[in-house]
Image (cartoon, rainbow, N blue to C red; front, side, top):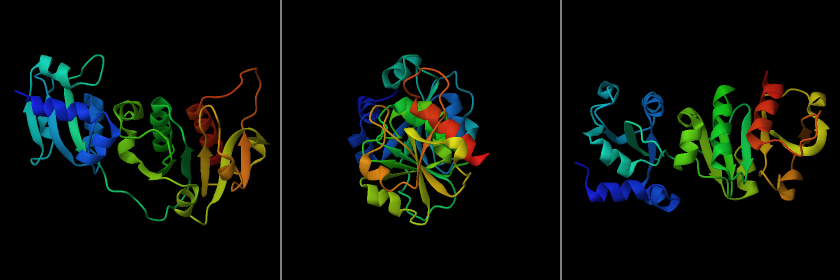
Amino acid sequence: MITKAQVKHIHSLVHKKYRQAGKQFIVEGKKLVEELTKSKYHIDTVYHTSHFKGNTIFKKSTQIECIEEFEMQKISQLKTPTSILALVDLPLSYTENMIGFSLLLDNIQDPGNVGTIIRIADWFNIQHLILHQQTADVFQPKVVQASMGSLFNVQCIYRQTIDDALNISKTKKIYAAVLQGTDMRKIEKNKDIILVIGNESNGIQSELREQCEALITIPQLGNATSLNASVACGILCAHLLL
């Protein structure tokens, strides 16, 4: 039986300060947990109901507890609880020089957008994602769910200042997605850049725009006032990488 202390600890991990203090985050759902086991992430504890039939995929060092469905409902962060929830250790921070195409998210606050951009990065084999300032924490439950397991394949690096974000890879050119810039079809394909995707409402900060070599716009055929950040990211990645 799961204890009150365990329930309290799991609920605390919804909040960033407790994730950082406890150095753990939550992963829920059979598909996500299966993807997790293929990664280098360390799984501390697994809670599952009798409906989950896959204990052999975990390392012997992983603590596994079979709990009742009503107990899973107590700890789940989903409207419809699944059969498995894992507590995972936060990874170490990455600071090594990055090679190849990278993404920089400038204050993107919507968890769904951040999770989807992580999936896009994984799809295009983009190894590094730089997250600036108030960008949503990639280890919060909504981002983890939206990433559909791709979080475990992409290195996410947080930096508090623009200089720190850009100094990770000083040799790269910086391109940015904007509403009014150069038609992307006129931009030469480049697999060794940092592509900046800005805040959903405010776009890219002026201080960051000034350091960009190219401001890129996706051609518009209709009357929409803007594109969702993750949609724009996917279109530009396809254009610049394929």
